[in-house]
Amino acid sequence: MQIYVVAMILLVIAGVLIDVTHKKSAKYFFENAKKQEKNARRSVSSGEKVGLAVQTIVGEVLTSSEFSHRGEQQRRVSHLLTMYGFIFFVVSTAVLIFAHPTSGEAGIWPLLWHLGALSLAVGGYWFWFFIRVDVSAEGNPWYRVVRADLFILSLLAMATFALLWSFTQGTAIGWLFFALFIAASTTLFSTVIWSKFAHMFFKPAAAYQKKVTKADGSQENLPDVGELTDPKLQARYPDIPEYMGTNPPNMGLGITREPPRHY
Image 1 (cartoon, rainbow, N blue to C red):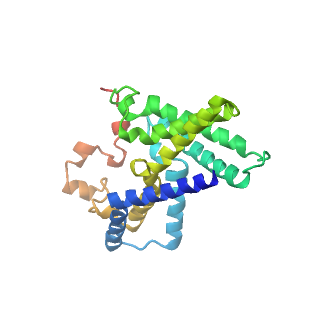
Image 2: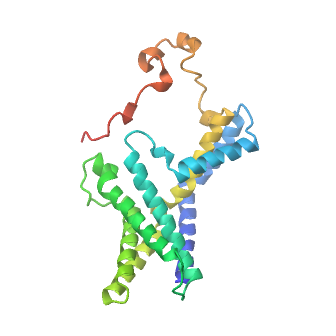
Image 3: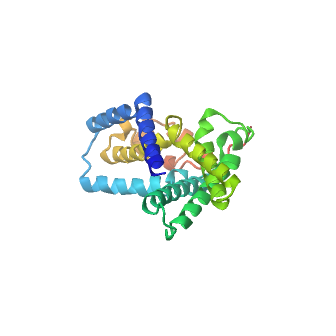
């Protein structure tokens, strides 16, 4: 099992590198950063960068603040249950296999293993049946499967068969669930190029860079429009109040006014 865990880690690393190379996302990221430095209007101090990094970790990583908009509360809770369930499940699995390979005295780790798998299953099934955009907004049936679903389905299968194996250990069907558990986890970690693992690593870096572009004034290499409430700007573009109201930064709920259920 220790050899298996190491093999899965190597598969994830290889899959992420292949994904980044194939999509050239890393190349785009660094080229965009160079353009940002040229267009910067002020230098961001090391202390500011640390503060922005902390904001990124707390907001985008630990609390999934991108789902804080109206109508996305369920998606946020489901995402957090799945994310933290996966983390607890994987970490406790590694601890049990490497630190307690033969001992029955593993402390709290078996409990964390089960809670992680349960949280992963609850968040994942909630997403699969009720929150997926092609189900909730486009009206497709929940059992419609495409290649993009490989990640979530293998994730759910891994958590489900892990719990079933745990509850039936020592029986013939327990060995069947164990085999299915290993097959699901192998599928999950060997298909990283079609999954969201690379996204999980790239997303925090992109969110951090976006915060830096706001701090240094480069504005993601977009032209400086100015403050839309500035009377001089409104005199130059008199249709701003007509199309955006008298208080443009607070234009209302927009697309979050109601859930997209008009299929």
